[in-house]
Image (cartoon, rainbow, N blue to C red; front, top):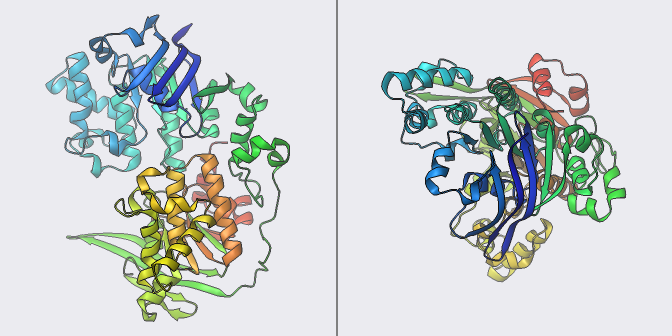
Length: 542
């Protein structure tokens, strides 16, 4: 029996058709995964169920919850349902939790509003919810503010809040997209266990088919506001009928091989037969013989942060060498020291101990302008790393102007247009601003800006971690192409081991600020020696 049935749901925003008459149902005590890329309509579907679409949305069709059409429900009735009978875990907990209230107060608000709890009763219930959500020392977390918790802890608070009133339907919108594989595994196991114990129905929204397979009984695949395929997990994964579903499965990097290129969805749909097979490739690409000169060497790099009497040893004596035109993958959980090590290499943090050698010379003795031109960084979040007040042309021209590249504005603009062409964007993008681009396009702009100085080493810090599999595949292919063209070296930082397997020649694993294992990518993935490396690999959804 269906708990919720969507029939012919259409949503329009001005001239944009966000949903084009979709239909599916969520049976009782069942998890349904809603899968697709950004812009496919997944989150619009969830917001339609909760009645949270903006006023300019035109909605038609039916959303039957326990045989009541939610599209015709009064606002008061919808408010009574939200957080009580239907709850939602949002994608980004830091954006969803109020920074000025403690997390205990925020979870207690749902208890006060829907169940009439107050005082000691609400506090005791919050502690029980935190304990059920897997938070350590739950009583001490009640008075903590969101910024005082890790990403995994914040997501557990969101889960506790969503479950506070024992809903019958839980909507989870990309609840693990920015989490490490080990934390992701913990959160998925927690959600699945709570769903079974409480006999809830769940709508699990994701762009990752591996996650869908791990948590759901049924799968609905969406693209551009339409349902392309739906059915049981076994049917959709073992015998997908739609080319788009097959393309989504093919785009994701695999752990057991390193193809020369990743299939891209548009190419796959145009020519499924050739793109779907992929190219097995080899770990060594053309032009790489394995004896290249060393461009970067770190010797005993360490970093200690001090706050009052408290010391945090973020990096504890890391050493490595990186050859020209090669990629060193750096993996580990949040807090392992990956990003700090990258910032030490880039001289964006002063090292507490150790040294960095650039082409055999102490980096501290290399003139700052020379060093900055040789080493560039592509950061994780292009929304934060691009100046919103600069046009794309100004963003690309600024580093050229500072470093004296180009005879004048005209030549720099011409070079900027050439950089955009390298990353697959039209010259017209020069006159636009960052907010006019998608996340994947912004990351391409960030890569173009890094290339403006023709660096010898590019540090990619989680540069593709929050992107859809198809956009991720495009950018990974682009980075490989640029490396082959310019013989650049990459320090590729990521918590996604499948992506690192595709990109890296060598892999370095960090835990609690220490390097626990280093080796060639193929050998390390085939036979990991350290228990932590084995745990990371075991946590990846298969």
